[in-house]
Length: 233
Image (tube, rainbow, N blue to C red; front, side, top):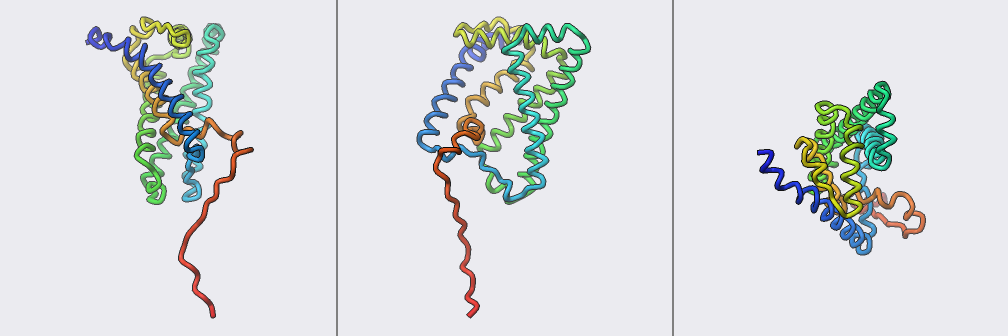
């Protein structure tokens, strides 16, 4: 079975990354040029704020640390391996990554529960939002499972995944680096590509423009319509 699935590796890890990036840049630019005001998080905070706080804050702080960790392992693999040469520092890095991964998942799950429990918030949640939530949840669950079942991820990411991603940058994908990895890791990477490709169709695009364009962009006017008040006379 493993040999059968290996035939798909060149497509999934050699072609899919470029397809995802092509869709990302093409749709992102097209959307900004034609519908620039759609670059918003479409926040539902004004509909409900208490659960919103406990969902958004853990998610955002957690995801920033998790993404920063992945980026550092990609940009500075040698330094990461050097840091991990000390068992204490290795444990510290692994535990920190796991904690913030769980924190991110907690915030995302809280956000999903909020949209399911509060009808006003659920009403403004689109099908694309639900697809995005499921994709992000899958990414976080597989990431946490990798951290638990396949420890020392920071080291093998720096040693194996980082060279693979750099090979993509050089337009010479070394799929052979990814092929031996467990399918749990492969699914995590494939879903990451799917998130990148789906990114420009969702509310996530707001991270590309916050906060700079708001300094010179024309203000967006919002009007509330309701029944006219009865005359007191």
